[in-house]
Length: 298
Length: 284
Image (cartoon, rainbow over all chains, first blue to last red; front, side, top):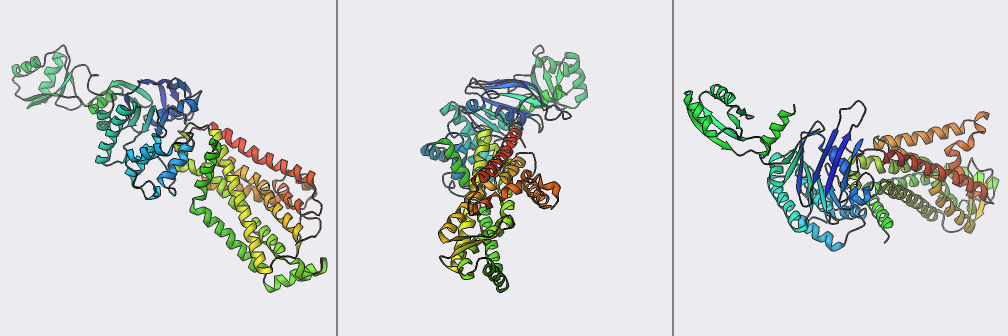
């Protein structure tokens, strides 16, 4: 549904590279996350996807149309929130939607009302946006992205500034969009826990380069992560090294490859006289994965 | 409604929904009233009386609502016209880029050219509305002061001589001039729009436009023979072409030549602005 190939971008000759040969593919109906620190290149990538930023090289294809060569045709399938949404404060939410949708060929009044109700803004839609809370602005941003019905939704930090209830509700809405309308979703975020709960796959960007692409739950690493509680961590690390066992991000974490039985590691520790107080398999989180691939790419 | 008109309608709706629009129009009205007050002070009125009596005769006839309205409009446009047109047009792209509104528009399936055409036209319509507002309110002020009927007495430094019209012809010429302002101010719109498309602060677009027009005005008025050959290159010399509409016999070929030049200048500003904007990355 969305193919990004070989994107390269440098804003100025002397500036560091913003994107360096970034490629990825988002399949139809998938929720795909773009992760990275501030300045990693997420917004630049989304800007190129939306035809707002011109790449030095590479191309983006959405639904078979090139954003770089047929921008309007490609974007007809897309709804987006790009960077912090800035509405006209002096207009009502409804009027803002009318202004924006006029550039998408206009939208049927019923569809507009339905979308507004779906995002939960029906009571305040005829109030000035200047009176809206941050959460309400985000809802309005989502409403404008959904008008008219897009096949692909591109969201830049969509939960930024939302309260926990807002985040949960937003997550449910994304699932609903995929389930009911089959919308393909690409979102960028630095909220790892949030992305982990929503996305099927992620790409991690660092300094403009893609350093990881794949599922966001622990399948990427070679082996399983365990937490060990013992009086002599240094001794345990020496034993681990001898067995070819790696280390996790924290001192008591060990990355045991598939070739080593965890029980053998414990047995080796006990044989060396170490007291094992706790040995637990850790379910790898996206945060672990993120930290791991980030540290590997240093 | 065709799509383009719908986009233009909502752009205008947005512009006229701003409080600033009404503050701006209110300022114009206030300036008109100040000028009216100054023109009707005893001393000013006696000066006008002596002059009209000497040149045309019949002060009561020629110091009419139309004469008063013409003077109010002329002085108001000199004081505020360029500033307001620059302010509105200088903001149209630069402010929306700075505030981020443009990002929401540009993620839509619309070309940058179309977006800019809509915005440029909206600025022109907005300015035209302002000119008619000034013209009509000045006439209302004149009518309240001097009543219906009489002649129209016109003098401006750029006119070859004093011109007088009777009521019907004067009214037609008055409204022709108001309509002419829309073309006359096109270069100001063009310069401000071009600057607005650059990566600069909105205020800078306005200030630079006003500075360019002011510098052009000063240079064009320097009484040196060297400048005489270049008068037709000055924007403000061309902008004075609306006064041709007040000649007894309107020199239409000169009007058309000047207006073609002004139109060309304004559109050139738009095209350069578009080319620059088209090549820009839009990102905070």
